[in-house]
Image 1 (tube, rainbow, N blue to C red):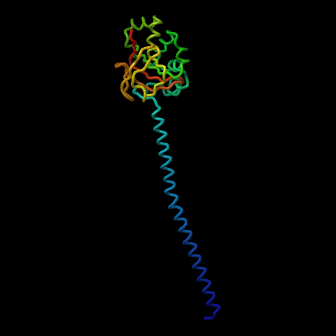
Image 2 (image 1 turned 90 degrees about the vertical axis):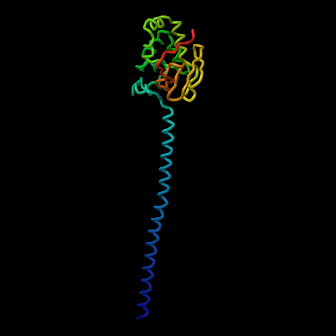
Length: 218
């Protein structure tokens, strides 16, 4: 074999070895990159899921609760989102569950008082709650502005009570105290009035819809 032939074969072998090394290096780099990116992607996905879960839990904690919440309109001015935009007397006037209460508030001349108050809590009796009163007693109450005002202001506290601070004794605008027992979602006011739908937000108040009219001490 001549020297030239041996040299050509040596160069060819070196080139082939170099090409093989480059190919193996590229495959190794690609495999390594894929392996390292997978845990990172998983971590990012996990973090996003955890963040979303936390936000979702926080959002749920701020939602109204109670069996009667399903009867509140799903949209429009009387819905939860609609009521949140209006002051409390206006918000209640758009909720079909509270039409008798709204009539009483208007009869007592308390619309502006309630709408202009800041950070209050209203225990709002449903239409059925007023219907529990004998008709003669309800008619007499609606006709007596002073007594009606006393009863209605007994349903209002001068502080905005979140569910986690609802249980306890609270001073009302009427001057007397009312007592709430239980825990979310089962609260009772003054021992006989159940919260049917609570933590309803309006522009200036938190509302707890109750199944019995609260009566102050005479």
